[in-house]
View (cartoon, rainbow, N blue to C red):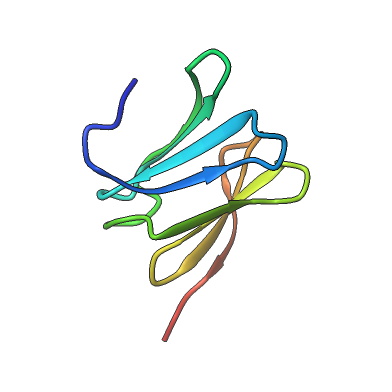
Length: 86
């Protein structure tokens, strides 16, 4: 379940249990650190690299950015909000 492309961004949850990794092709994977298991995948969030990610306070969502910003629901796997740059 590794990334097929180079990693461009990492984000660790505040409880140090969950890791998000984003790659150069806009894909994000969510990992449980203790087991190394991939819990969720967000494919092609963007057409190019992921530059920044941060979990919400209760890990219910993940904010992902490159030039634009997308808020992804951790349970649903759906995009909840999108903010486009000009």
